[in-house]
Image (cartoon, rainbow, N blue to C red; front, side):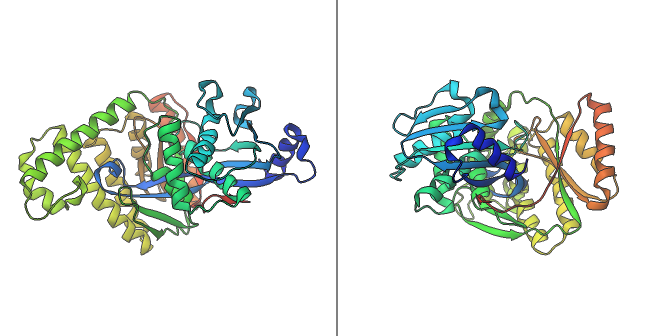
Length: 393
């Protein structure tokens, strides 16, 4: 949908703004290129913003009413509140994410003197793990910053949006999604330590290659319980390893290098706790090496790190699933494919692949056919570009 079409929809639903037409904004989604399930182990993640995301047309009001409509949930109609009465309401469904951001901004002392009318539209697939909630959160904060000249840095916006999702919506998310969206930069990934918020923009010029996102369209199950179990196993591994590692103080599992891990890993039985530690420490190493590969334009090496990451997530962290494995296995022998891996929490969601532009159509055809034959499910494909962050369009 074009921006002009969105403006037309906006004026149909909010005709009092015909004179000015409203301002148009875009906020990207994100994919994590590598560095999976190590953010809570003191490791590095390497996400990037993508050109799929959430659009909005918005205009200030002269009172304190807030009216929101999503074209993705048009059957719900316009959802209303006032700045002075915002509270979580399950019946408001998706609107709790932008409303929570406005509430959190005001709680933090930011002055929002007037309400707004906002029309949203997203082209991110729902439930695919591409951070649609973080996208609309950072978008809402950016609209408020633009309209009311709020003094907020992109890092502060990311932190406030995470706080909103944690406390207003009750979702225990980390900082990676909001941070990578707020800090997005064209043709760059973001190397981020989620504990310290130390970050670096990493050149990620893909040249003749395209980032293909493959949605398994499999409904996820048991993600929360599996996530909690793996965090506990990682904590157990760190406690045991830290008790015998005397070379220097450790603050997290990923402080260990692979060599250091091998020197003390005998304290862990070769069970799930060992496997989780093995993945976390090696995945952190893979992420750092991937950063080097991308910076040097060595996409061949980066693709091999992608494959290695998926194998570890499958065999050591055990968060992949048949559907994700099928996509990666189908990708490997195809011409023009440098790498593929699951991305996100696992047990469904999406995989990503790095594919030469001349072979994208054949890749989609071959993977689509093989995936349907082996799973009975139809996959969805999205060609993504590495995007800049949230702002006016």
